[in-house]
Picture (cartoon, rainbow, N blue to C red):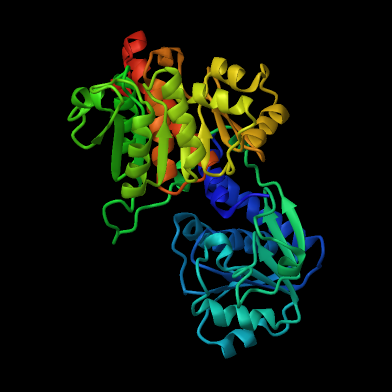
Length: 473
């Protein structure tokens, strides 16, 4: 089962892998026509066509049906189609296919009278909120028809107050989230040529899952991030916090021990640096005096996500502070670098997070082995470990692995030049930024891994092993 958001991701990734959307639409429409042909002979078919690509699928189906023994007619809900693919397929309809433009419920009833099959290619997965006119009236009239009612991909308005009452739904690639026989009638899944790699590997389609900032949004609506780290190492928190900004977060706060504050404040003007008190004045390590200040910063600035670990060091008291933060914070979280060392101690005590949808751990292979006592990367085992830890895993390596309890994906972008220190900090900064913007953890990891690898590949093609993390930023 896939989500509606996954549909767009798969379409984009398929094109990236060499299967253009024209091919997917052609295969989808032909699949619908073949399914109808296998059930009916020489009947009259009316295809209800919306303005988008679902309508394009319907136009392809109408073309194939008309080339057989079917008397085929189409009804354009808006009198036109809008997407380039749908326009191209409208022009390819044979002249003998009669075209109607929807004008009123009464006229539509006349068109549907005597038809044996009514095809819903109105909106597919493209509807948000309750249905508006003219679709509401079209669906109501079509649902009363005694003909075989066939939905393309999903019935228009599925699960809403008004929806197309399909006897049969021909869906593509996989069942969509929410599809049931009570809502869709008989469900038939058709392969339309989406490459398996589009699902197995990350790709540019991950970007389609990033929630947009509203046009009327205010500062902070695009994400607020709190990075907790730094002290003995000052480069890592700078890379992470800068990457969070580059990942689209509106506000990034960097909380570091007071001894490191003077070194980091102003390094990146857009990052708001917060000095954390330490037991020793001017201390460079997080200690118990820092803990309450971290909590106050989180309560005051309400971050959408927190990143724990970059550059923090492994002093026992520092690890204890990071452990306390992980136990206390119940929002979206990314654990990286020295934060993973703290998590290793928690894991031995039986600790686990409560939400793989909101928590990410980003270990390299060595950290993964220390954290899990596992060596191999078999999918079933990695997913079990993700479930046990209550977090999504982003395992960094020559081939990145993203794993949640339900699924696993690989990332093939990136190169050997990216073993230079700092690239992992950039990756965790991107992940926490995407989490703060409302992405699910699995999707945030997929987009972050693909993006940094793609940028790194471009830099490596020009600079080779002279690649620096700042080149990627």
